[in-house]
Length: 225
Image: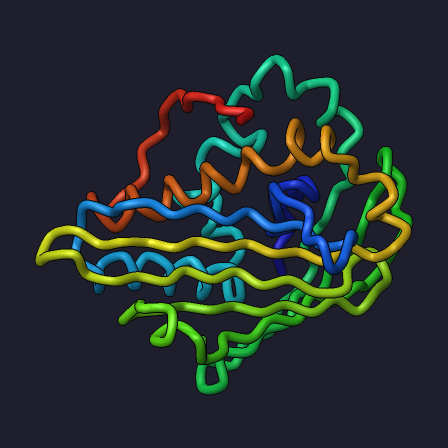
């Protein structure tokens, strides 16, 4: 049973831009270059998905380095926004390696009080049917559903294409659809100041792992743009 507590902003894989068709949905979309072969970047993404589904505690050892309270100092500008963060407490999880489907049971606390008990986050790795059409030769895609009304769904996508034997073009996308009640509290400023910057760090850590085989503790350059 997992007992580690993480902030909602760490777990909610979410966004920096508002989707015009659905104001409840936001997404981080980043294109970058990884100085490693495509298969190494795909391994990094697949490792992330597996740990997220099967053993979430492991994420704190590499891909979450720099975005949570465990051994990291938050950016001074973020302290006020993060002070009253919603807390998620992992209770139990199941994972089927054959279907690559997982389920995590969580309790949700607000200001130190438990508001929701035994909520479930279901995840499944699925085929990215549009990757080849978009010009990418490798792809990893994870979709999520939530049993309560806080969220409606989410997905994370990492697409990769070899530029040469040692360089990979990477397209990274994290999309989250909030429930209507929670969406009303996620203004553009809250999203930018308290959430979106964390997911830039996740991508940076995925790339670093692909390039070096590890993610080192370090002081990150905070970018609010």
